[in-house]
Length: 275
Image 1 (cartoon, rainbow, N blue to C red):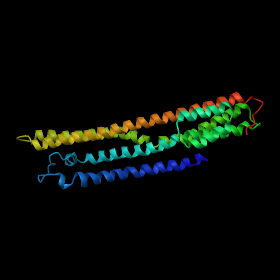
Image 2: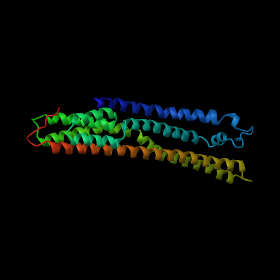
Image 3: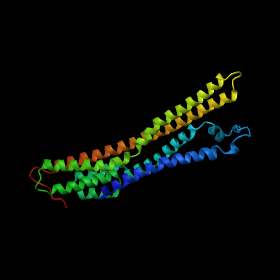
Image 4: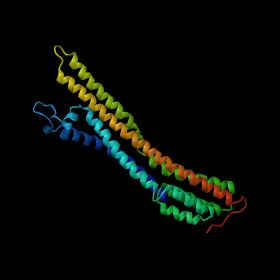
């Protein structure tokens, strides 16, 4: 029953991504032009006031709001993934849950294991519950051989896992993409800034010190924003993939235990009757 909600969650995640990207771009543009570009941040000459970082960042050029939108996307998707994965972990420790399931299976108490799954309220609990329900179903089916029953249990494990895990990996590709693209866009801004700086040096007569400083400033600001956005994206991406791998390992461990228990407690020509 739990797995029926998965398509709705997937649809929500897709809609969430479609909404977040344009909203982050719009917010970044508004912040860049109306907050960073406010007249109060600049001298009458148009130069940023001394120590006013909003004005300094504004002078970074048109690449800055793009990088700001990337940073907002990284933060937003990271928060969304954190909430989703924490919910997938359910209540309590995964290790404790696995130990409890193994303990119930060692005494062939499938009903007790099912109760623990219902209390866990996470992806591991959902998958284990689905597999244990299949366990009970095939255990009392005398028309199937032992091998057929084990295949049915393994298939249920694979199907339940296939329903649960993709929702956890949703939007991680966006974080991975931002980790690379933010650096490249920051580099593009750096190149544009340096072009302006060298153009000032190449101007006839005395080099324009103001134009030179502006070009270098634009280059450094874009570099800083690109690197910071990329760094956060890489950190969060690795954190989330690590947590998903831990959850996947727990699912595999429980699935293996259930199969081993079934093989040990059921012979080819007899089936245990479960209460």
